[in-house]
Every structure is written in structure tokens, then in C-alpha cells.
Image (cartoon, rainbow, N blue to C red; front, side):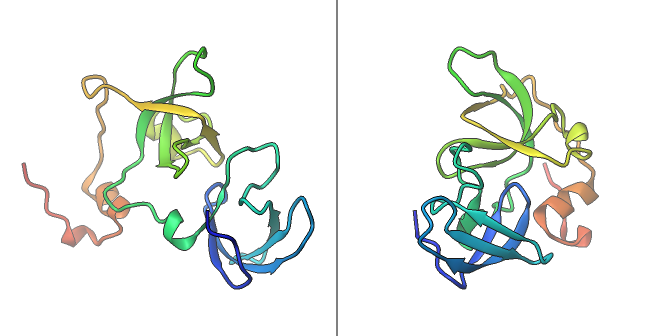
Length: 156
């Protein structure tokens, strides 16, 4: 993983907020300080974790944080340990280390619209295509793709 440097533009996946690294010091626990666009300050481990107990980074350089335009939120199955039962959650992004960033308690796309908190799951898999049906309006598709609705043409 690339080291964080003062002046780096970074993105916190949980906060869904852009910021800039304002200091990197030699403290052993949280050496990275970030000032976010909303004026808030936060500190992170050298690996980009918000707390040492997280085990998963949530701070990334700009190129790591961008979600591809063809990547739509979708329902997947998640669990933390091999022996746990699979649960359904709405996937936001597959992280570089293979884990899944999901909306906390949202089991459907509709529930995800009201969810504000996220969590990371160690194991995840796609639902079978037979059980997964996604209904989206043209406006929702255009919004997800980051384009104007007039630029969207749906064909079979």
C-alpha cells in the first residue's frame, strides 16, 4: 500500500468524504491527520485504519476510492467467519483487500436509501442471478452512472 504524505488527496470510505492529509508524524498509533472538506479533522493509522481494532483500512488515495461507473449497489451475501450463516446486505464497494463495504443493516436496495452507516465484511459472494432482481428508474440509473438522464439510452 502506498504511504500517505502531507498534501495527499484521500477518501474515507465510511464517511464518504474527501479530505487532505495535513500531517504525518511519528506517533506509533495514529500518525495520519486528515482535514475533510466539511472542516472536520480525523486521525488514522499508517495503514489508513480509523481504529487499530478495525483491521480494515477505510482511508484511501484518490485512485483507490473511485467506484467504477458500471458498479451499481447490489444485494450480496456476507459473513465474517466461515462458520457464520450468510446474511444479505447491500454492497457499496468491494475493497482492494477482498472485503466488502456494505450499508450496515440494509438487506434491500430500498432499505439502503435510508441507511447512514456502513460496515466491512470479511467474506462475501454474489447472489445467484435467479434470486436477484433489481428495479431501477431511468433517473436512478443516470444518477448512479453520474450522467444526465438525457444521455441515457436503454436498449435490449
